[in-house]
Length: 335
Image 1: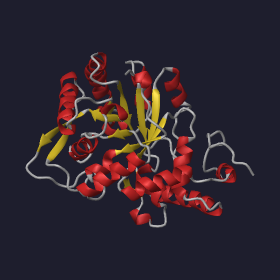
Image 2: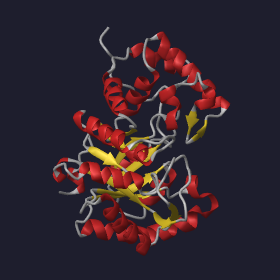
Image 3: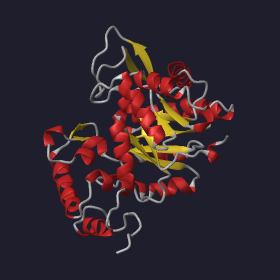
Image 4: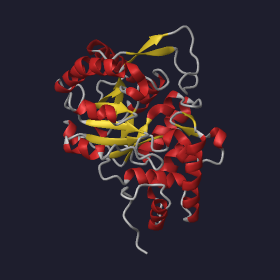
């Protein structure tokens, strides 16, 4: 089956929670969470070596191994190699991770090694979608241009070979910015860009229609991080516990979310329902990836996706300058 046949569904499961992001998740809860998502009809499951430093991949592979292999899409990432350390510690928001640390390596050999390591952790013989993880200035700052060249000259060749040999069905980027995706378009033949946190109810940094540019080049786009690491799910009332882009939310972000919340309350709409449906409404977004940490969250997410939102809510958000006038929103509901 080729990348053109890749079906991701309306929303997929983001596996960072299986790596104990922000709080420990028991094996029992991890299993119940994946099963609940399966029961909701979810068939795209995403993970990465970075999530819990191998823990997410180990858990997800164990939980999917009993499913018919052609019935789900599995994506993971390359760009970091896991090196053993003396003792585990909480890092990058992951609690009680595996005793490894991630070392960036976007070279040809590094990507090949990362792919083989992921197969071992997952305990599966095939990965459907292989994404180059966290390449770009957002993660690497001044070192980004040099690493990008290494990635395009080395890592991309490895990914393209794996796809050509049929070991993976699709290749792409999994990043927190669109600029590096735009640069990558001219350096390779990609199937999917997974872009986190850059198109949300709070942040529409679509860079003048990049999603449409990607589609014109034949590349699917999936939107992740639709709650901006948490604040669009939890709201802004507890500012001290509100996360934005994996850190405590700054005051301007908290104040903007409070204004969005106020509009949602006027229309009796949960803030996360508005956030989810806004992201799904972009016509160039092929799928939405959502981090799920419990069976209750899985069922709640399905309810949010189906929540009836009055069209006046979107009109009011536009009127108050909280979303752009041209922003796509769900079809108008009958009055």
